Amino acid sequence: MPGSAESQPLPEGGWSEEIRQLTDATVLPPVENGFVQAAGILDCNGAYCAHGALWRKFRPLTTEPTLPGGPVQKLTGRWLWGGVLWAHFGHFLVESTSRLWALAHLDQPVDGILFIPKRPRSGENLRGFQTGFLDMMAPGLQIRVAADPVQVEELIVPGQGFGLGKITAGTERFRNAIHSGFAQDIAPDGPDKIYLSRSALGLGKGGLLGEEHMETLLRAEGYDIFHPEQHDLATQVARYKAARKVVAADGSAVHLYAMVGRPDQSVAMILRRQSRSTNLLAENVRHFCGTTPTVISALRTEWLRKSQKKSNRLSFGELDHTVIGAALARDGFISETAQWPALSDTQRRQVFADKGLNRSDDFIESPYFVRQRVRAMRRARRAG
Image (cartoon, rainbow, N blue to C red; front, side):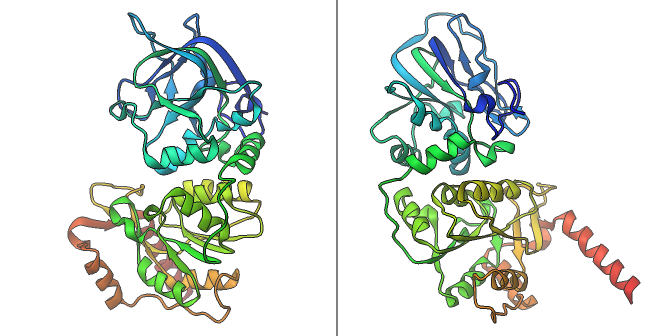
């Protein structure tokens, strides 16, 4: 059952669908970088407003701040609490939008949306994708980032309706608000089959070895190769609305697709690493789009920089094209007779050379895949 704001937000409702109204609340941005930061809202009596905290899975990432000494800047008017403003595209989509559902449930209009920066050095700066998204959700509404403590005349504090953890499904109020209020003026425009690629991002942000070869195979099946980061948000949304079949490398672009996707569209996600977060991404698509995506785990192995020690967002996977082709053919994304061969050893060496990678000196295989290979060899010996 949904609990109080001292427990994680849940898609079933509870505090994640409640709205608090505060007078003369003090908003305090973080003063230090960190995963968990002292930041958030104190009411007019100096009491912490846990309702405004950002949660990720089982814990809050913002905790009770201390009221600063001395005078605090005043902000007049009525403002909607937006929470933490992330500069990372995916975290912005999932965590900085989580209060916007309240726009559809206000008894009076607000003067704007008030955020605090995730990183203190970001200050009051807004990025293009942030303003682009917010303008598609709340056209003409003022956006403000509180880089310094500020006392707000009237602050509307919605619960966290979206995020990472169980709340990845989104509350019903959040999903309804996105479906009825986001990007309504953008018409579908684009091909009916697209692949959402990460190949132009490079391996520095985590990637897929052999992705370019897979793109060649997908082009032969009629797919347009789309690099989201090379287009503005309006173009991305138009493409996602138009596509009948969507194949994607798992990543932030899928979160945006989920906000405009429909049950009549087919989606396949190709995993780029061994991570539980990909299950959250699939749940995001399932609950928002009303369809279950095809999730393809087809890593031949995963490569880590020696300094990493374990899989993370900077790891990159090496694709097994045979497994991917079979899964896509099975679920109707490519022709039933398609047979995608795995890369030969010569082709694999060329992929590493093309990427400027040196496997022996700079990279190691993920221990997970090494263990899997050893177990497979043992099973084969026993069977033989």
